[in-house]
Length: 354
Image (tube, rainbow, N blue to C red):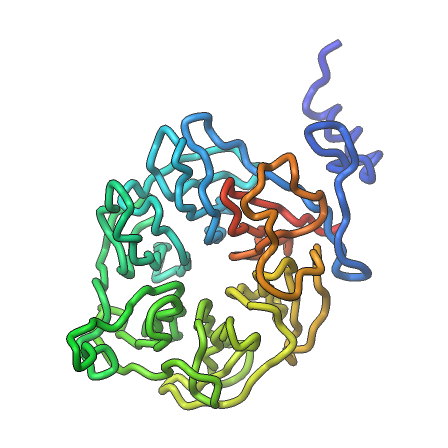
């Protein structure tokens, strides 16, 4: 007997506890967290077309219509080289693009400017032995939601911090993520290069550089993620100082403020109603509150040194409800969390609030 949409919705409303409690195989979904921060973990979320195979899934954001954007490095066996994949809020494939970035796709940020939304991509430097070489690398790119390039910042700024060594060896530059100030200034984290933060205007004009490798206040060791904290009166620049296992906070002109500790290789940030999600590369997702206190730690793998060897395994070996190497995360409008992981076959997990 055919069921109408109205009958289906009525049945769903009568039995809400049964909705979404099973995965595709029919087994119950794992639950992570507790109390006010409890989520069902929907692993392998999104209907990926057969022509696309995930590489390392690095960045994830949501647009104002609820579409989810995932930036990935593209698997070697993928038929298409598109590094950006877009899904609607139900996980249905919408489009893909980004053939310029396979192998180097990394950071991802979204921002509404006037009546239009734009994506900001941070693209890694390529392995010199990679064949073919990507069309763009070691670059920051502003695009429309469909991939049209508005501007790009190619390579490091021409300042003393990036002058070659006396023997002519060039300074490393390998951007990982960016943040944007309320006035539109862009802060780029050179997380895999020389560990500086460089500031530009909204038109990609250079302003200043600060940071550099070290553990002292103002110094950074792999500034992998970066976020503009606007929860208080004065905005603060927060850096995921990954290899120092901490967050470091700066004024917008690059002056060190303080540290926030208690992290395991923090990667990046997203904020929703004052709470912040921080993916920790060592197998967990951390939630912090308005005072930067830990609220919850989700899907903890128990890895406290190195990275989980499961990141190179096949999907069949992944453990439900346990993260491997969370690399990017974002809230959706309903407070659910999307997590993407640095695993060779890629993984997108939706943490649905329960």
